[in-house]
Length: 128
Image (cartoon, rainbow, N blue to C red; front, side):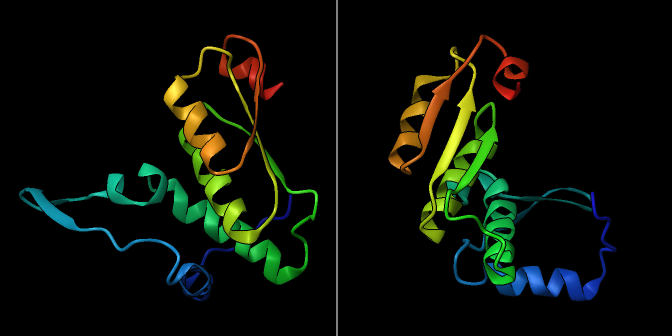
């Protein structure tokens, strides 16, 4: 695995890659010195949309995004983000989930065009 140093330039590059494709979310005060980002308002309902969109866009820009698409094992939110981002890049997404995954997540994945594979009863089995 290649290790990369995270610096301002890397953060700026990621922000530029996802600009216009993810939603800005509100930040609200929660307590003294604590703020909540309302990431449930993001595409797919979690912050993971940001990372998935950046990951696929970075690979597209580098010429390393395979035409065959992307594959992920997920209990739900990461798979949703991956499928959403893959659809935006016009590449297939295959998502492995446990057979007992919530039906609503399976249907949302399929709605994003993902090839959903239900395997085993636990996340570890879907990952294998």
